Length: 184
Ligand SMILES: [Zn+2]
Image (tube, rainbow, N blue to C red; front, side):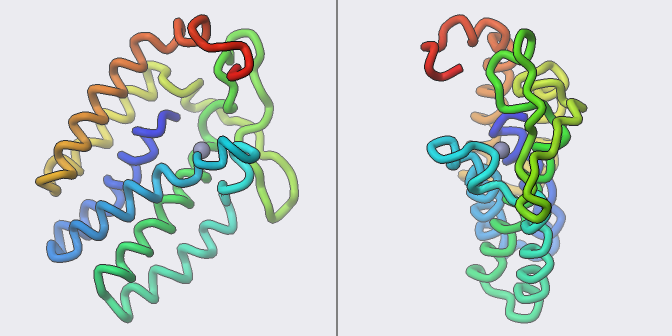
């Protein structure tokens, strides 16, 4: 899935909370956006392994959610949104394709690393690859709750994210040819 899809998943999840408790909306949005992006920073280490916790992330989320509910503040709520968004990112990576740029010729059997069992989870390919038409459709539909609930910088970011997602999806199958060999 595209980075924007991960961010929109997280924003869609926190949107009802932000709607119910508007004073925490900025913290929820910031946590969701950063948490949706953060796991992929492991591109420079071992991608889909170093910062991806598809199971342990759920345990961490189970710990920070009650903490934020008991001691609600922008900081605790933002951290909870960040941890939950990072977990959803890692868990949903298992539902997409592998991290390869060129799934047509070299599909990978590694979606995301399960640190608990010490093995790779294989891709379900419900979303066949990042930037697939179904990925773009998912991204746009998941962006709707965020557009309805948030305003200000979040709206700007979401609109920009939709434009980038659609543009990327349009050229996705040609991107491979433009990349230097070492990136593939
Ligand atoms: Zn990822």
